[in-house]
Image (tube, rainbow, N blue to C red; front, side, top):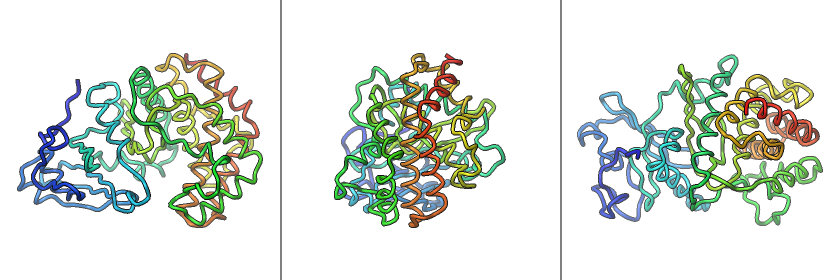
Length: 367
């Protein structure tokens, strides 16, 4: 059994630790004191850096050089109906599931009641911003490591009873009444992109195909992308996954398709869809083949044509999801990056059967 480096705080005993008063988000130093990662004096001397985006995230660097990340549910996220429950559940599950623990960062404190998580911080050079602009990113070695990590996650949790359901809501977008859509906190640009894509038969067909294909069987991450990973180039290369907010019981093909989508969308976002081969079958290059081969090598039932079709369907749907995310972040529905990712999704949807056959070949060759 994997043990977490926590002290007996309220998260495990029901007794509140000093500084963790109920009913309010605890301060980062109080969380670190409750976790017992260092002396109170060292924690008081820690340098804190605010990394908050949608959640309250603090990077804490202690005098001895050790570092931790404290993640708390922000008031804005709470007001938007978001929660860290699924993420905390994944880390709690990993505390007695060594296979799952191998693909997550190391937690030092979990508090489900206050929705607080503290992790050992990864080195900056192992995070996406430090690696994404390197020539040849992602390397074959990192793609292989991601494939292995996803296979470990899925095979380890296939027979585990799960309390949470993964969020793959974009696949149901064609069936949502307009008033029920929530897109990037109701971003004007994301709403405009959604209206446009719902008028596009190829994109709607891609979403409906994915919705019909998904069969939940295990814990999935739900938001696989290179930006949500710790990337240790090794050797040997190793990938661990961050940000489990959308995780839960789901179809493993969604995670694999998401990995393909994010890899291809990096090119579409940075250089435009014209930088990709005109035939999406050719997008399955040596890097993506390595990812698929590594996945199939560890996931014994990944070589079927049905699974490959689910991966291909998920790939298309996830590209659409990424375009909506991009629109919400740039607040410009005609932004080149958004247009590029949607154009790539159209190509995938239009060549679905050929793409699925190529994915199948890559998976079956390694099985």
